[in-house]
Length: 232
Image (cartoon, rainbow, N blue to C red; front, side, top):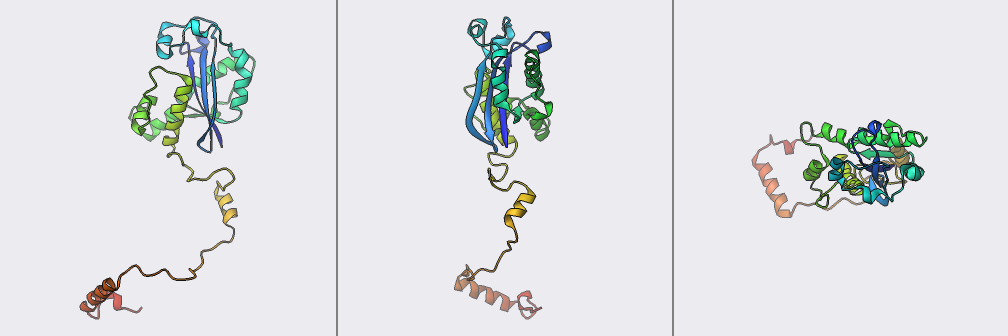
């Protein structure tokens, strides 16, 4: 199972009011384990950066001016994502921007059902508790000390760790990996007609002779009504 943990940085909150993506970061997981493959791209938004957004991610006009526009990187991004599930914190925000950008360059949208929202998972798992990425890092003891500003690749790397904790740790599938059985039917096929057999030699007793003698004396002192003396 291939998943892409993804984050974006933008110029604001609404692509339909002129805001654009300025950074995409993504980390590939395979069977819930990082593969080492990442995607990272800064993007020229073709507009000025509002001060409020700059204070969040630190990406200014001078830095972004020589970066490619989205149209130049769109196909590479779509190819990297493929049909993998997209693991995103507050998926509605990022998916809204990604699909707006794809639409502007005449590429198909990514289906909403392709996204997994870790914010929704966290709110359902810990109702009433803070569910920001920083709050989840504190809950799971994940080091995010290098996160002084928002950055898409760093945030996606941190989110990958948070996601694995949310779904049960680094081995949520109990260690099953590619090529192994992953469904009830596949497990049945793998096991075939196997049934447990008696041991070829009994295991040695773990009681010492003194412990066995003490138990026998205890039972004897209880008289003939002791349950250990019953034969049926």
